[in-house]
Length: 408
Image (cartoon, rainbow, N blue to C red; front, side, top):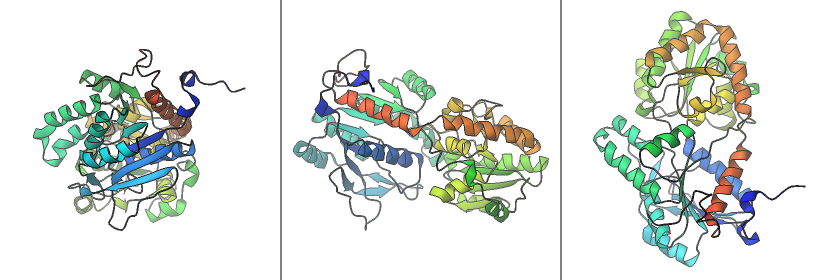
């Protein structure tokens, strides 16, 4: 017999289903970790019977909002983000949200991004005394130096801290990030990990035809990078590591999957790199599984979903020892970890894998086993439980929950 979880013991039956307003500047079919994660969480909450009001910028002029009994899309005006093709920043909308939520009040507001639309939602929810949860998905303060606004780093840090500290809780993907943000003055942080779809990302999708298209023989090492081709991703180290691998094994190939403002320059500088462009769904999964070694030297991740997708696909990961890699990769067992920003060691590890196919094969096999434990269903349950706690008036001031609805 299934026992009622302790979390729900103080909840009245009519609180088991919530009306959740989700506010975000990015959402599928846009391709990035925030959109992917949020799309999965929204779908899971709908499957559990909750109602979702999804508030986001209109992705194109022809787009029409979805409206069903369970899902109501509210499309707002947005501006294209400079040097970030395909994404928009939502414009302020506090007055419109106040009117909408006064007429039809949600149980809770969940804010995934901290732009003007997110700030408007936060201000409106606080004014109406609606519980608020936020996500910390992106290290915008770390991005600033890559976009010519490094002088804004401290104001950005202060803004993000003020934003998140006004919420009842902020969800972060790793314990390491919680420790870092706590030291910076953030409060009410909860670790909510991310999962990986092992039905989609798995070694069975390996394609010899795709490898032949890349010019790789069955035994040739293929290195892979998946992600945005942008300054904050440290792509110079991907190219440098590839050169080190080729010196050890000239048959090595490098495939870069993704698009972004750096693509044109990279193609001119490195004609020996294969640029596959943006891929999605089964096509993306086949690209992952057809590689052997995953190079991910980014220094600006809060998590890095691609790390887990690569592991689930059977790739030997080379990454820095932080974010998702620090949490899920065991050095020398399921991947290779260099200390943060140690570029020389990173390149050396990549070259070692090009030289040692036995080690690469071992890491690939154990990576798949490690990723298999990251079931999305557990993450969905954790996310739902946190939201249920937040809307429970009986638990909101219980010191055991760690939540408080006092104003900040």
